Image (cartoon, rainbow over all chains, first blue to last red; front, side, top):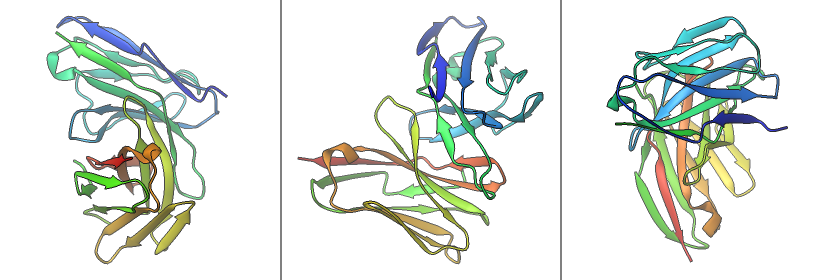
Length: 114
Length: 110
């Protein structure tokens, strides 16, 4: 199993550009999430999905869109990049096991917006 | 908002020593999890403790949970250079959605 994969690893955008961060998992997990990690702040939840066709907002959703057309893929779209979106982005997947949700993380995408 | 808060922010120990870090949280939880993050990598799940458990072991890791004080601790015994990483606690007060703390950075000196 490849686990959770993310592309690209690094990206530099200019303010106002749009792009899509890709995330895929091959573990048939129901749940998928996007987080951003900023220095000294831990991870903050952007959007999440509890199954194909179902998405919801997390703690910091503004400026981002998601969709989940298949179980495997959960892309994150930046609509109009801003310097405040400079961060490291992690995708994670999980399944429910007796009411607990251990998360499997991808390697991250380091995004810089100039 | 972040539910969990780790203490200390940073910890430096000699190889072979034990490392202890704490996590405090604000609201009732179902489970509490600990994750490790090596520099430049994604997080890796270490251990999960349920709200009705008080202590759990996994290899050199020992986790305690005190729901009355809303706190947890992670102990790494006989530390190794490979334990150098950041450690995060995560709580699931709201079902699937995890809330992470800012982490404790552990440096193990040879």
